[in-house]
Image (cartoon, rainbow, N blue to C red; front, side, top):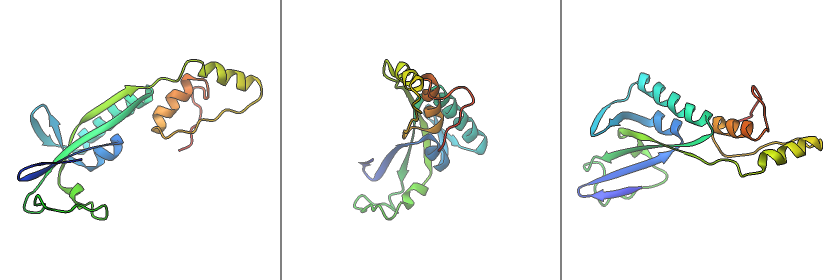
Length: 148
């Protein structure tokens, strides 16, 4: 997403936490911005994984301002040139949300198993989130395998 606040572009990105954390070089805490070193990247990754392991969907957010000398307000962005992503992204935070399985799913999984049906789950969720949800509804038990 791009906003033009003359004379700069201000960009806000959202995505998988690991994608966002990997690309950020700075960290916003309140109104201050700090360098984001490997220690803090690891702490952020661990926090994101803890949320996912509880079955929460996690989205990471970051932002940056593009230098006006490289990106004037009439600059034409292209999907073929994403070099602006290398301009010092600032990690802004996570949002996590619970999207619990629908009522009756665990019972349906149990009935399928009783009937000899092998139950599998196909999802676009983060593997840790998927594993937590699959455990909640009885598709896998503790220590069960997931394939990514």
